[in-house]
Amino acid sequence: MALKISEQNGTFFIQGRINTTTATNFKSHFKFLLETNTGLTLNIDAIEEIDVAGLNALYDIYNQAIIYKKKFYIVGNGCKEIYNEFKQSNQAA
Image (cartoon, rainbow, N blue to C red; front, side):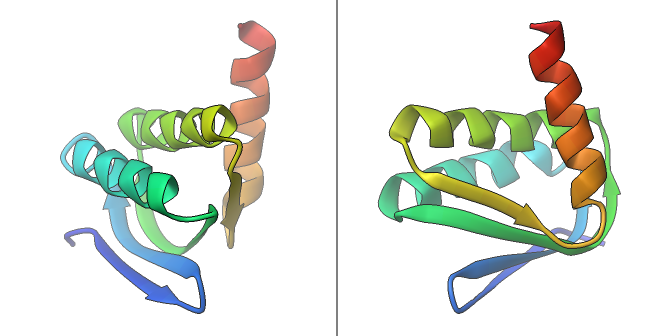
């Protein structure tokens, strides 16, 4: 399934796969939105797959949010696992 992004009340719902094929466009899209909004909330309930490239894309968007001092939230099923990945990456750095 191709990656589908929709927005409702300021939350962006992501459906499909964030992987090597889709990660670059995903990252570019949300970095642009981050620059033009006060923050981002991503709902990942409908993510079917996320690989290392997808996690790196999320991590890059997260770092961009820190640089721009914008709010960045990931909500939905699987967000705890992503949080743990970010936490491990920060400890390793």
